[in-house]
Image (cartoon, rainbow, N blue to C red):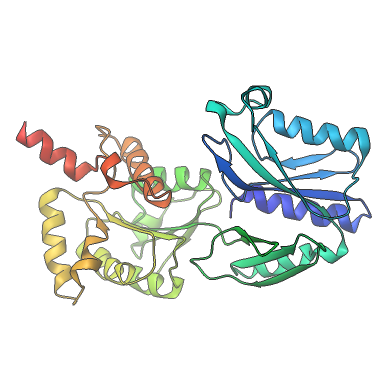
Length: 331
């Protein structure tokens, strides 16, 4: 989950602990263009304080104005929509006539926010179920494939954990990639057993681990919110870690290197009894083609491809680095 939405939950817990009333607003559906994704949250305190975002603009202003003018009037969750008409879309700043559907839930000590935060702190992916007719809340462990939905009068929302990125190698490119990924709210871990590369490597919010990369990948228990990128150019460090990552549920596995080196790597990985399907998951040469040359540009290229994969952008809409090089050679 995004740190913004985690901050929303923590702020709600603090307001409730202080005896203040508040309501939680969650994006449950969008049509057309939408500034914030399904699952994004906003919290409004009875005194008008606000944290989070559901549209990045005028919808927040309208929701806040309602609370400031009338207080928190609702006793049970409500579903509301913005942008049904062209006039509303224009009024609330929704692009291209987009429509957004929101759940507004008045919170109380029965909303189980502290318990939810405790489970999130333990790294659990949690499904929070809100019964719209009664406001009753239950919590349960969510499956990785679960989606947010309203089903049989119950709003199911998903919470935690953050997206994770494991970078193999602590070189110059790793510094830029780790910095960008951390800024995009990934929980970043850089792994390098070589002391000469770890020396002086320090990025706020990024963990630096002294371990063999394949051991780290195994211990990480990679899930569908995890990515692994190998950047050392050293088969002794990269290959075993890639093998473990390709057998996992990681949504993205990539490795730096030329087309020739990538072909050799794939041949080596075949010796580890990886299936063709598992090998096909390897992104290499890594990144989307943007003409990148410098470490900073290459890091942007990698994060662009990783983001596209995470957001399920169709492959035909992308030009991977490897494909671009092939097209250039043919031209």
